[in-house]
Amino acid sequence: MTNYQGNGAYCYANGGSMLLASIGETVSPSLLEVASGFSLGASLVRHDLLHFDQAMSSPDQALNHAFHHLGFQVTENVKGNDASMPIDELTEALKNGPALLGPLDMGMLTYLPNHPFLHGCDHYVLAIKIEGDRLLLHDPAGYPYVWFPIAQLENAWRAKSIEWSSGAYRYWTSPKRMENASDGVLAQRLLSFYEKIYRRHQNEYQSGSAIIYQKATDMQRDLVSMAEKEHLRHFAFPVGARRALDFSQFFQQSSPTFSSLKKAQAEIFGECYTYASYEDWRMVGETLEKLGGVEQEIERLFRENIES
Image 1 (cartoon, rainbow, N blue to C red):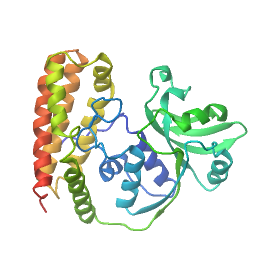
Image 2 (image 1 turned 135 degrees about the vertical axis):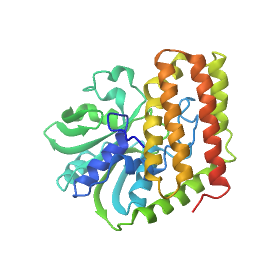
Image 3 (image 1 turned 180 degrees about the vertical axis):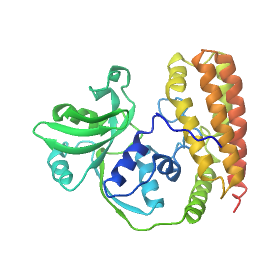
Image 4 (image 1 turned 90 degrees about the vertical axis):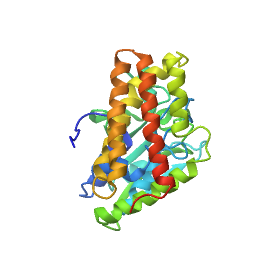
């Protein structure tokens, strides 16, 4: 299998990897993504746009799942929606090590060149230290050692428009290794977790292969908005391909059937993106039908009991 290394919208996985690296642990973003289980299935929960992830979770919950499955204890902090920004608390926490902040509203991260077009998009960054009225951070979107004004941090970090994440001002600190499971043990743990996810999804109307098929039909009938087409072209298709490939590579030995299906999905995501890049939306619709077919096979695999 040909590996992929390169850029991608892996903000929470990259951020989690950087946080664990602060205690000398080398955990790849790809492994964190797989351990989170977030990018399984498909959903319409956020803005009624097609996302290739599970509707019953969010990236912050996914991070907690990933840390737990990988054997780490990490302190999560979150405030109520009406709370004030805990800047003094964060300042103290950063004296003992970095903190992973998120979700943040990308549209309010003014150092990003295209931030005016990103309102409502969730993001995660690694906070390093606070000096005066500025926060030093690593942004996994490609911007290390950025200084961001504290005055602008409040609205970005409160992230009122990120409705799928509960609370405000969420951050993680103080990771500690509690267990070091073998790849085989981890694989079986994750397969059991995925099976629970798919069993929960089977009665959901707006999830899984059914909505992929519906979007495929809508795309071929030219019923999909330009906003959704841009979402698929700029985000969902390319990140979907990378995520599927990560799953495929991790499970090559422990679950070859699942691995093969995820590899097929990765290739189909790439094909979807190719047609989308040339605005051939009819062919995008036809290719989405193939994606729905593979997702249906994955659903059947887990619901009928995953291979051991």
